Length: 287
Image: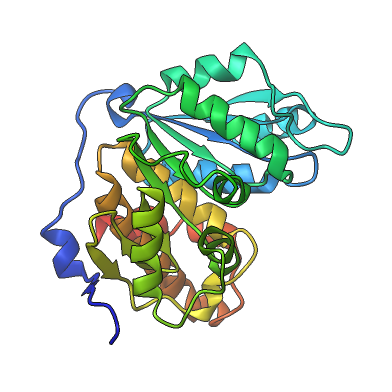
């Protein structure tokens, strides 16, 4: 029997309204995105801009040092920090005290977009967990999920606010098997196993077994960079004060509906991930 989950609708989200911080940018929180490599800086850019579009007040990007100057020009709203690289352009796992300090001061840390090496990503993930405050929210994506699959007890019992955002390939690594057709059930299993909220292709679950599903996502979201946008969107919602399950449900809806809004201009599969970014604020505002 298929697992039971609630459909994410505008009505459900209106009854679960996002926090609306008052005051300056600090009230909307600081998001730090840790990712990138010499060849994948775009992933960090997409995640970071999505976080701002979702409402984050301050954005910081930590990426391979060879890409820092170009990122700072492309995203002038962000503080950009270059991290030491390996010989093949991956971010090293021992980036030093500068990153540790940024993690300690951030409200949300998103780890994974654009990272390219499992071993060094595992070291980065442990650094983040060691340096982050107990109230710091974490979003783990891409290679950070691969690293987590090699240390499945890393988050268990920690009490941290964590959201995992696997695609089907990453879910396979986390589960240790191919996902079945019932993605509600797979999301619930992953949430319980890793003690974190899980957002798996619009199927959201919590460690205590609550589950939701977003039904309007379309094929166009299956494009390069779309997952980075979703991770940043989630981080931005967490930054403005949403709890992890709430942020995951709102992000799943905003991601899917932003894609729908692009269909009249580009067709179902013709839009780019970066074109989702400008749709996010309007989609959230008009729920």
